[in-house]
Amino acid sequence: MNLLKSLAAVSSLTMVSRVLGFVRDTIIARTFGAGVASDAFVVAFKLPNLLRRIFAEGAFSQAFVPILAEYKMQQGEEATRTFIAYVSGLLTLVLALVTAIGVLAAPWIVWATAPGFADEAERFDLTVDLLRVTFPYILLISLSSLAGAILNTWNRFSVPAFVPTLLNVSMIVFALFLTPYFDPPIMALGWAVLVGGLAQLLWQLPHLKKIGMLVLPRLSFGDLGVGRVLKQMGPAIFGVSVSQISLIINTVFASFLVAGSVSWMYYADRLMELPSGVLGVALGTILLPALSKTYASKDREEYRRLLDWGLRLCFLLVLPCTLALAILAEPLVVSLFQYGKFTANDSLMTQQALMAYAVGLLALILVKILAPGF
Image 1 (cartoon, rainbow, N blue to C red):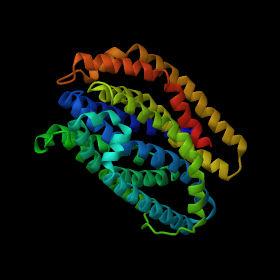
Image 2 (cartoon, helix red, strand yellow):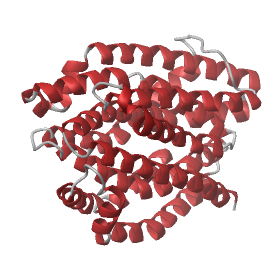
Image 3 (tube, rainbow, N blue to C red):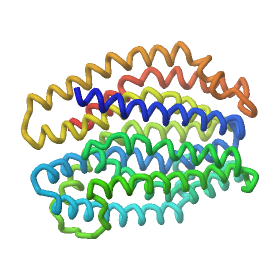
């Protein structure tokens, strides 16, 4: 089956990225431990990452890809290029405004999402400084996600699947070699995020050119295709944001706890992202274009078959992963993170968070499969 082949390719590249991500996190944990500096970075990185997951990779892709597939099949190449130009123009404008607001309003954003930090001036100010550096990442990664959605529609799954690796490489290089040049050293990770986001966007541009879909952004507020994308984004935003906003709620509560609490939850969540990314994201990525094509051709039987295939595969693969995360929480955390400044107590707290997170793994991945179906 072509879908199974595509799933294997995307899952393999996602696995490489996730493993490299664990190398990144091991280096960061060893270098900074779990304390004031790491908490500040986790919060500053989580906010643009949250917006990326909700809008760029979540709601936007689910609204954009089906309409793009329809244009590709029914409207012809020139109309498709025009549609992409208008969508990219509006996306760039909106995200540039969001980025500017985020940079200017950084103190209020930190206060709203990590109110416990307000009682500690050092942690609060450091988080604000880091957020101002990392917030432009939302613009870069959203444009990168747009490019990835186009490439996926043309069945070039491996190119966008490789993209997360570039961010990991950037953060590893900055953490290992460039921290002495920043004051405080944790600021190196903030700039690493920005450089990684730029690399992720630039990597995909030559591949867009190869398929003839590299166009300059243009604005047209009255375009029907753009209007359809915006209309479909509303329900998609609601569906995707529920699980993501829960992470912010976790951060709000953790910000009132002892220093390191935010970091413990971050490292537990990172371990959850291995099965979530390798299985959930990969399945959602290859299913969305296929579902879009069958929907455009009004083949309801094939549509049901594709969705059923995804759900069956999810249950088959995810349940063992859930048990493995719960049972092997201690050796996983100790072997990956307990080095340098990351203490035995940090490992214990991270293990407990991971065991709690594992309970919701199946539901989390089912959402990634079912959401494209809507």
